[in-house]
Image 1 (cartoon, rainbow, N blue to C red):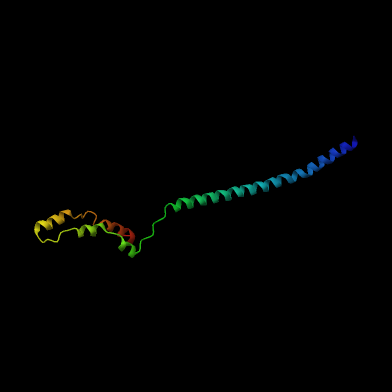
Image 2 (cartoon, rainbow, N blue to C red):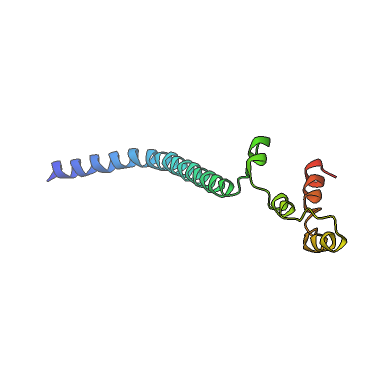
Length: 115
């Protein structure tokens, strides 16, 4: 019986010596877990930022050759005009000519030049 009490006493002493070390270990583990959570949040935030930003990509400007290769509806409309020099025919061509969007690109030019 005395041996059992000695063993229990040894266990209690061992527990007393181990107890002060335990909180220090818990603090370091808590700091590591906190750091891991912060890094994970930064990674998730970065991925979200990249996904949102990739949806707002600006289209690259076209080269001059690409622009010239595209069909131009205004030029095609001018090709359909008559070649007569009669006043009535000229007035008819003028009435059919659409001049509403003629200056639409001026706003874009001003924006590109920063004016």
